[in-house]
Image (cartoon, rainbow, N blue to C red; front, side, top):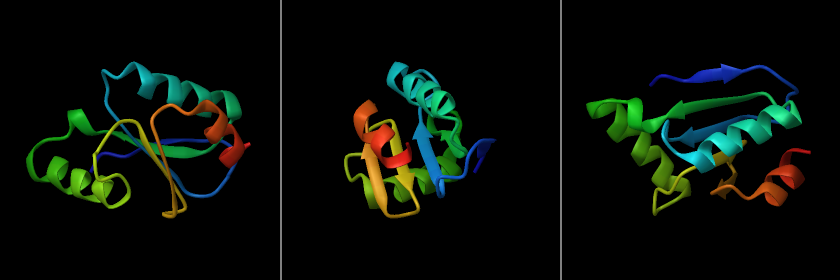
Length: 92
């Protein structure tokens, strides 16, 4: 899986599953940048075949509907969609 890493303040293991064409995903990445949070992300629509299938299977563990963006914090907390207040509270 292609995982991109963005340096910043360590607020736990933050993984963002996004789509390259999704406006809400771009807003989430921008907010994480504004907060200066270290995170990793993958653009699921740019993955192919088995790699994409494996990532979708991983996402559905946290988000059965597989909506985007899906942010997973420390493999425990899941924030689905661009919920600015919830993201700020979890990572602020």
